[in-house]
Length: 286
Ligand code: PAF
Image 1 (tube, rainbow, N blue to C red):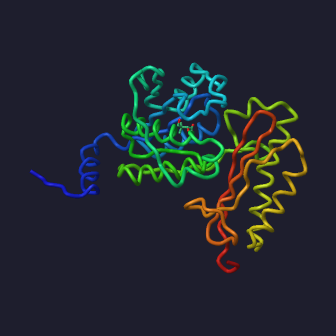
Image 2 (cartoon, protein in one colour):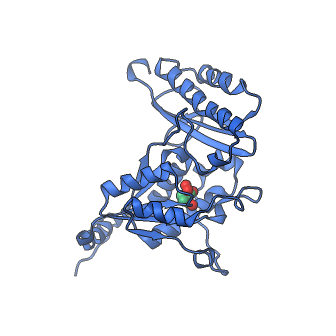
C-alpha cells in the first residue's frame, strides 16, 4: 500500500491513474458561442486528448438589475459549433439540475474580487467561483481554458484553483478582436450601429495607453490622461473605470513597472463593455 502525505503527491498519483485516457481540456461557457469561445475550444483541441465544453447561463453571477433575462441563448447553434469544432463532450445542464431547490453552498475568493468588476457588480464573482467550482468538481479537467478578455475573472479563478489545491492548469488565451479592436463578446450583438462605432473607443484608448508605456512613459497619470482624451471625445461613452494595475494582484499603480494590466469598463447605451491589455515594461526603461 502506498501512503501519501502531500497534496502534490496525491495529484501525481491521480494523474497516473488517468494516463491511459490523456488530459481533459475544459472550456466553460454561458453559450451564445462566438469566435472568442471557438478560439478557446481550438486551443483545447490542440492540447488535450479530450475536450469538454459546458453551456450554462449561470444566474448566480448576474446582479438583480442585470441582463439575465435577455442574455442570448441559442443551444442548437452552440451544439452545431461544438460538433464542428471537434468537442468530445458538451455539458449543458438545466437550471434545476445544476442548482436544485435546496442548493445552499457558495464559494468566495476574497481580496481579488473587491475592486473593479467586483465594485460595479458586488455579487458577480461569488456566482462565478461557485459555478466554476461545481463545474471543475464535475468535469475534473486537467486544463481549463479561459479568455484574457475577462482578466479579473481569470485571476480570480487562478486564485481559486490555488487555494483549493486543484491539480488543474489554467490557460489564459488571447482576446479575440473585431476589425477595429473591439473585444468579441456575446453582448456586442446588442449594440446599435452608432453604439458599435463608440464601442471601438475602449480598445483604442487601451492601445493608446499601451503605446505610451511601450515608448517609455512611466507616470500613470500621464498614461491615464492620454487614454482619457480618447474616451472623453465621445460624451456617450461612460467610463466606469480605467486603471493601470499590477498584473498579479490588480492593485492600482502610480508608477508603471514590471508587467501591468490596463483595465477598462465603459457603458455605451445599455451595454456594458470590459477590456484589458497586458503591457510589459521594457527593462532598460523601467
Ligand atoms: O466567462 C464566462 O463565460 C462565465 O463567467 C463562466 C466562466 C462560463 C462561468 O459562468
